[in-house]
Amino acid sequence: MARSAAAGPPGPPEHPPIGLLVARVAKAMDRAFDQALAAAGGTRPTWLVLLAIKSRPHRTQSELAQRLEISEPTLTHHLDRMVASGLVTRTPDPVNRRAQAITLTAEGDAVFARLRAAAVAFDATARRGLGEKDVEQLRHALITLQDNVTGSSGVEERST
Image (cartoon, rainbow, N blue to C red; front, side, top):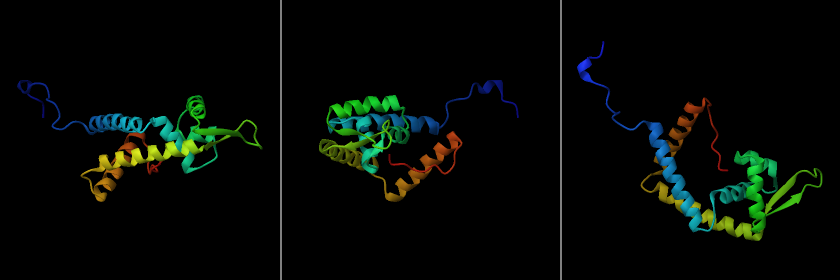
């Protein structure tokens, strides 16, 4: 059926489009998480690198960059800063001289523990008012949205 000219242009949607809502929530959560890490004396890049190393020690720079889905030069920048701060060490691989294993120092372990506590507290704040069933449904919905917009299916959830 043809639209009546008197009806005028369509109005706004009844609810914000889901993509816009997810994007807004993601930005708000990003800012709040970065603030929580900063209050604990860290940054998101530091947290992500420490978490990746802690979850699988003695990774090479190449493996870390791949796991974190960042370029090797970007990772090198972060690692240079972390080495200078005494959080990690680079050790040449005796078999492959071009590869370097990255390991946490005692100070790196201490910073990891502090940032982990901040991340756990942030997660608890974000989950406030949600039961475990709600969280699982949300997790499923977010993975489904990601699959829908990327054309992938069965995306594995990653912690690092």
